[in-house]
Amino acid sequence: MVVGSDISRCPNTPWPTCRGYLHKRTHSGFVKGWRKRWFVLKHDGWLHYYRHKKDEGKCPPLEVIKLDGAEVGIDSTLGKPFVFNCVPPSGNRTFCLCATSTQEMKRWLEAMDKAAHPVHQNHVWEHVTLHNSSLPPLAIKNPECLGLLHQLDGSADVWVQRYCILKDGCLYFYTSIRSTQASGGLYLQGYRVNEQTLSFKQSVIELKPPSEEFKTFYFCAENKTENQRWITALKMSIKKWLPLHQAIQDFMNRPLEETRM
Image (cartoon, rainbow, N blue to C red; front, top):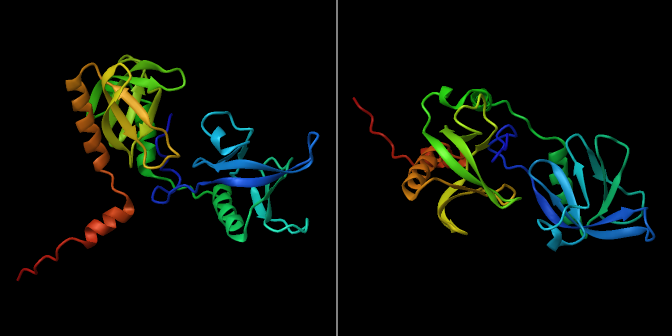
């Protein structure tokens, strides 16, 4: 299932992310020592690094490191300041990294430690959506919207037709109306719904994520009327889910009710 936002990882706390240049110690190749690399800690707990900042999003990473279960800590054995190590769960390799200051090192250590020890939270709604995804499309009760949508496959730059069901802030994808289960889905909490013009399509539905760490999705219905129907339904479905801080603020701002005698 394609996940727009993963609520299983403590839904009210953003997944830690970090970006920046670090020096990576290397023992391979003709040049041994420290090499400057652009590191990106993704929301899913994977650490990517590239040769240059400009390569992010344009070139495949030089390497991807799983941090869930990794050991992260300061290394004072080299006699060099701001050095820290990362040992992935496999344990067969140690990544030795160096920041530019104490503050930068602390920022990376905190973010990587949270990624290495994520807070998992069982959420009843997650179980409901997983159950719904195992059902045929017409078996989902009281959908908020349903019908055919074309989704833009960015990697191939083609539009793929899907039968879609919207229910409680989750958009389920099916190959066709006769499918026995969903082929994927999106958790849409925090997403913004916009109408855009993209290439030859006159009206396109843009689903913009709350953070650049998540992917932007584009959909298009058969005509402008259908697009508007989907846009209205998506906005209403997403609006039902408020971030915790916003719900608390709304509650605190409510006028005091008069006591009735």
